[in-house]
Length: 275
Ligand SMILES: [Zn+2]
Ligand SMILES: [Zn+2]
Image (cartoon, rainbow, N blue to C red; front, side):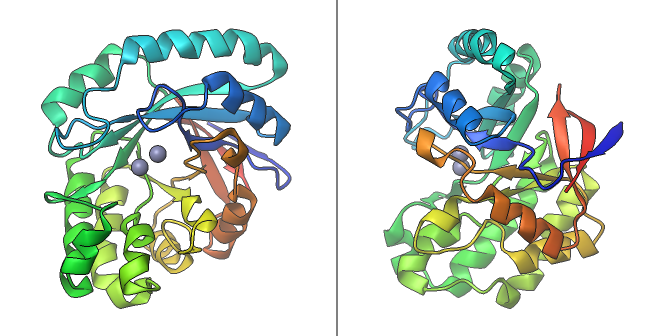
């Protein structure tokens, strides 16, 4: 493993989607073009693989089609200086391991994101769920299941650790993670114990909640507990959002005490990049 300074340049965008995800209309080529325009030299297409039958993306994920499309953009954009990692965003890995694991073993992924889009039987994108459930119930339930998912392992990086807050914001208002420290620390414990990295996801910066996932304070705890593995992701579903907020995410990482982020290949950390 080597380390190098990136002179403050955004080193990667490790969370984005394309038409290979059920909820995205942008082609891989459009997303690649945008990455080059934004000066981002390394990206990962992390398409939704959501096996839960009730999920809007259930049944859509097609690894063969994905890898064909990926090879095509690698041929076009590789020579232009863009490194394109093979990624996937797996929903609820702890519940669908039997379905997911064979796919992860069959295809040459570079980075596997683990996401929790459902808290029990409730979609965290369903505002009604938060309207019907007090924060004292919904928030610990989310983090408890997130910790369970991280304890189960099988993925490389935990995506958008507190993603529920973007939908809950319309009902609960601002989310102050300091009120939920006891719920968050077990998640970090599990990530650190299983060698799972944490993503700073910037989707929240372009919507009313106005915060990263996770927020600064939670990142401080992760770092203080010994967490080192960190990646950045815009979670973009449109070309205009590629790289969005990642410079701010780098500042946040430094503020939380991090001095480097991770580069992944073949599901291993192959480099620590100084920030
Ligand atoms: Zn997600
Ligand atoms: Zn995503």
